[in-house]
Image 1 (cartoon, rainbow, N blue to C red):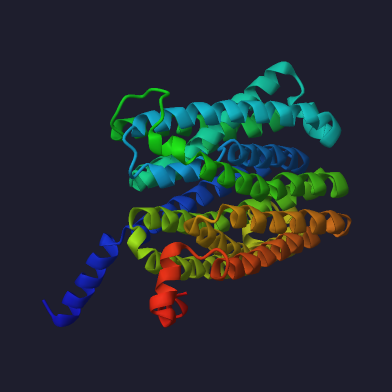
Image 2: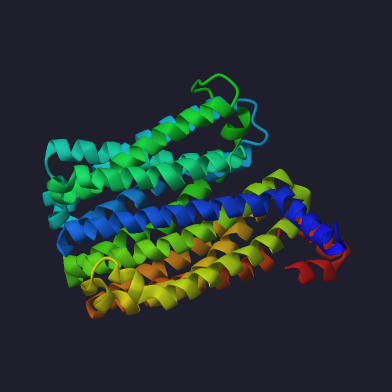
Length: 438
């Protein structure tokens, strides 16, 4: 074996042994597979249904995803923190699942009951008691599926998540689309929700196979002690998903359901972009909790990886935007390409904001976490409300502006008032080291 081959082998071995990099790669692969499955699903949906039906179903999907995040109550990020040291890991998972299902059902019911006021068109779709019950159940399943993503990462079983969310979810969605094609808007949403329900059940079963302990509702001391952190994480999540709830409604109410379909499909593509960034960020945080003595190195590598992922995603989407939307029909490409490109470019600001947020989370500065996200969310909502009558591009720019301001403020705070104790000690003993690393 030549010296060059030996060097490459050593480099590959180093990459394979790097858990943060490998988990990020697996999660990014899962994201790509989910993007592929989602693209095929919405391609089929756009060919089988009218733009109005796609727009309304897309709004229900966006709302379900947002409610699923709200229903986490901070437990998803808390499990990343506590699972490595928990003495009752199965009980922690069981408790978290029950809490998340309950919260999601209540939030979905509240959202549905407000629809006659906030969006009468959506109320027509899920206004009957049966449709309402189905919607609440499927939203609860979506919440469990979000939670299990974090559990797979915390127990280092990201491969299982790839097979479930990357393969099973996409296949099930596309298959159900043809079975439920005659059910209109509710059938489109039911295809997404039914596939998510299947994936959530399978994920919980797989997790319990790999997590030892009694599956009771008696959580560990570590999980109970982290309730303040969970509360701050939940507040941050609530503020983070508010724009996802508000922006689709702004588009439909101001511009109509057809424009809502264009905006929704554009956001779905960019959401996959952002999901890759989120995967790196979550992996960075999980690794920082497993190796707290090396968190400076983890933050640096996480930031570099996040930047590469974000720039690559933007380059691909900006170049291929018309072709991606043309898959759904010429109508989408003609009217949505600019919106998709602007949203994609704004994903760079999202990546910066998320990296800054992860720095604050690692620093365990709870007030800074919530405060910075509050600034970002308020700015997005206000600017989007002002821009809505002028088109979807303005709403996209509002989202990007809020993300950029949040990133700048978060980074400044993380370099000043929110420095973790270990970094403060390094600054006192070797002040040049931290500046070099960060």
